[in-house]
Length: 98
Image (cartoon, rainbow, N blue to C red; front, side, top):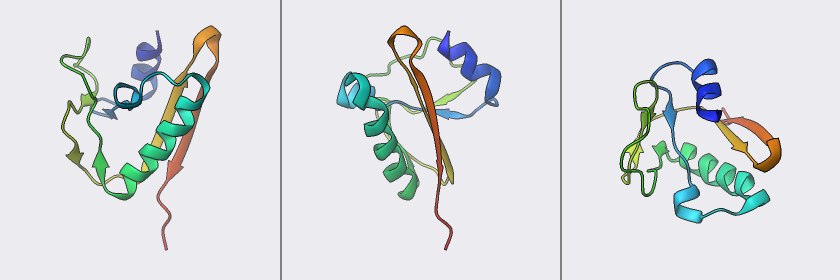
């Protein structure tokens, strides 16, 4: 369900990645930890690898990294968290321009 919602709102070839394969399931803390890791990756112009991803169930819409990171310059990041019982959130951050 969540994947279909993302497909509805984001354009083709948008990069998707998750840190869950690297840090495990941390319940309520996962969104915050992934946001911090994502912001750090954005400052380094890196899209982290999706640890353990062998084959996405639908690779026709989005772009994925596998175990290796990809260097890619981007200025905006959105972190979504779809939790148990419909507890969902989304946070968007952008690079600070001096």
